[in-house]
Structure formats: structure tokens, C-alpha cells
Amino acid sequence: MSEANIRSIQNITGKTYTNNVPGNAPVSHDNPGTLLTNSDADKIYKINTIIVSSIGGGGSEVSVQVYNGSNSAYLIKEVYIPLGTAQVISTKETYFYLRENYEIRAARTLGGSMSMNASIIISYEIIS
Image (cartoon, rainbow, N blue to C red; front, side, top):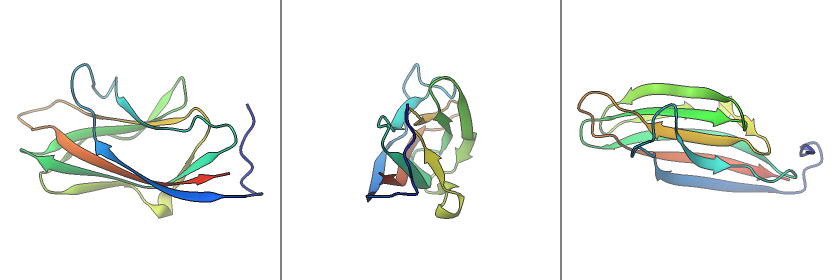
């Protein structure tokens, strides 16, 4: 597995991923759904912004993590987002790189009488 050389950049392509955060069984914070995967050895993804919004019912509880193929690290874990609000998880000032075979995963987690409806936006650049 070779690493993308970001000192000799040929292309930068801006992308935006939007979707609902997975939440149907058996999804939980321990078994999240995959949202974004870098499967190309010659590219690196620069994650600029991740925002989760609560879009229905009484709010949402959300977990977001980065997975490297064998281990995961939480960006947020079981954070409650009130209805009609958004939680900024990562910004351009706190960007990070998604290497080959790394994934961003997320889940709406259970708790109380929350509706569990949430959407996510991931703004990123593909660097090659």
C-alpha cells in the first residue's frame, strides 16, 4: 500500500456527501453504518467539515467515528442534538485526512423518546 504524495498535488476535487444518519437495527454506536470510504491508494481525502442536523421528532442522539480497517476512533459518541439544531463535528480549522481504506461511519443511537431522525453533511477534498 503506497501513500498519496500530497507534496506533488496534481488534482484537488471538492466534494460534498449528504445523507441521513443510519439508525435502523442492528445499527448502534458499536455497529455504525459506513458513510464515506477512501478506497484509492493514490488519493487522500481531506475532511473539511462534518455537520449533523436533527430533522424530526424530539431530537437525535448521534455517534460519528473514523475507522481504519481494524480500529475506530470517535469524533463524537452518543451526543444529543435537539430538534431543529445542528452539531458541528469538524471544521476546516480542525480538518483531518482519510487515508486509503479509512472510513467515516455514523449511527443514530438509542435513548429516551427521541425520534432518531438526523442528517449529515461531509465536505471534503479528494487530493491526488
